[in-house]
Amino acid sequence: MAAGGSRWHSCLGVIVSRQGQRVQQFQQAEDILLTLLEHVHGTEPRFLVDYCRNLESFEFMLRASEDTVRVEVPLRLDSDALRVWPCQPRDLGTCHLEVPSVVTGVEDWTSAGDMERGSGTVRHLAPGKVLQHLKELLVSAIVHCQRRFLLQPGDLSAENLKEDAMELSLLVRGGWKTVRFDIVPVVRRQQEPLRLQGRQRDRGFPEGSLQKATAEAHFIPASPRCWRSSAHLPVLKLLWAVDTLQGPRLDSLCLLEQLSSQDWREEDGSAGLSFDHLKTVLLWSTELFPSPEDWQDLEGSVYRLLVVLLRCLATRRLPHFLRPEENLFHGEPLDLASLQQKVEAFAQDPPRFLRFHFGLPASTKGLQADPELRALLRLPAKDGAYWDTAYFDILLSQLQVYGIQDDARRSAMSQLLAKVQREIPTRS
Image 1 (cartoon, rainbow, N blue to C red):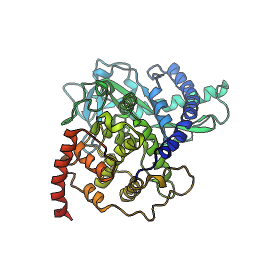
Image 2 (spheres, rainbow, N blue to C red; image 1 turned 120 degrees about the horizontal axis):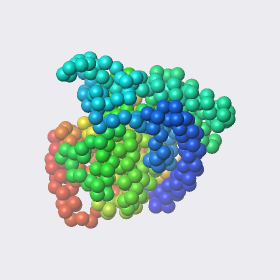
Image 3 (tube, rainbow, N blue to C red; image 1 turned 90 degrees about the vertical axis):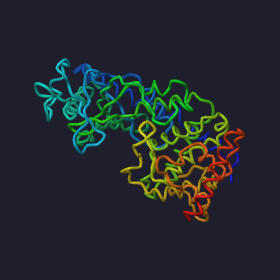
C-alpha cells in the first residue's frame, strides 16, 4: 500500500525547490505594500505599521495554492481599557468594543451604543468607520506613490477596494506573480492564558508555545457595527512552533496541500480544502500524536494528517484548534463526501497521485472503498467520542502504517479496538 520512499521525497523535493522563489515573490510584493502603509501611518498615526511579517511570509512559502494573504493593521489606542460586550441578539461570535471615557482620540471612530450603562451614552468602536477611514487613506497613498513614481505601471490593482467588504483587498505584483493582500484593521489586547477544556496544555507542542501564541486577543471587523475574534496570527504562531519540532511535519502539510490543489478539487478547480483547513489538521495531529516516534519519516507523518482529515470529512466536522466548538466546515461550499472519497483513494494508493500534473485531477477509477475503514470512520462522534490517540492508531493500523512499538499505547489501541468491534456490527 505504501509508495516507495523515493517517490515521496521526489515529490517533496519539487515542492521545496519552489519555496525560495515564493519567499522572494512575497518580499517584493510586501515592499510595495509597506510603502503604502508607511504613507498611511505618516498621514494618520493611529494606523500602525507592523514590520514583523515573518509569519505571513512563512505561510506563503508553505502554500501551493494562491490564497489571499491577510495583513493586519494594528490600531493605536488604549485597547486594554476597552470593554467587550456580545452583539445582540443574532450575531453569534461577534462583539461590541465599548469605549470608556478614559479612552480618548478615537471619537471619529465611534458610534452611539444601543443601550446605556450607568450614566451617559455608551460609545462603541465602529469597525465600519475605521475601515472607511483606512480605505480613504490607502487610496490617497496609492495616488501619492504614483505621482512620486514610487509605483510602476502594473505594480498593483485597487479595483477590489470598491467592494463593500470587511477587508480591503489589493492585488500587488511580486516578480511575475500577483499576490492578493486582504488588509484589515485589528484591535489587539492582552488576555488571560487560553484554557483548553479537557485537553492537556502544550501536548505535542514545545513548552509554553500555546501561552505565547494566545497572549493577545485580536479583534477584526465582522460587520459595520460589530467585531469578531480572530485566531489567524495565533494559529500561525503555533505553526511556527511546530516547525521547531523534529520530524517532517511541515513537509507533510506541504505535500497534502499540493495534492489538495491539484487532485482534491472539483474539475473546474473550485470547492477544495483551503490551507486553513489543512493547517488545522496538522495542529490536531501534533496534539493527538505527541510522540517523536510518529514523525520519523515522511510517509508516516503524512498518514498522521490523513487519518485526522478522514475522520473530519466523515463526521462533517473540523473543529477549530483553539475554539473546538467552531466547525471550520460550516458554511463552506464543499462536497465533503466527494472529498472523502478522494482522500481515501490517496491513502489506499499513494503512487497514483504522487506526481505533478496540470489539467484534470488524477482519476480514482478502479479504487474500491475499504468497508472496514468506512465503518471505523462512521463511528458516532457525539461529545468528542473517538477523538483520541487510540482511535486514530486504529485507523493507522487499518491502513497498515502503524509501526508504533510503545507497549502502553498498543495496549490502549487494542482495548479500544475490542470495544469498537462490538459496536460496529450493531450499526451495520
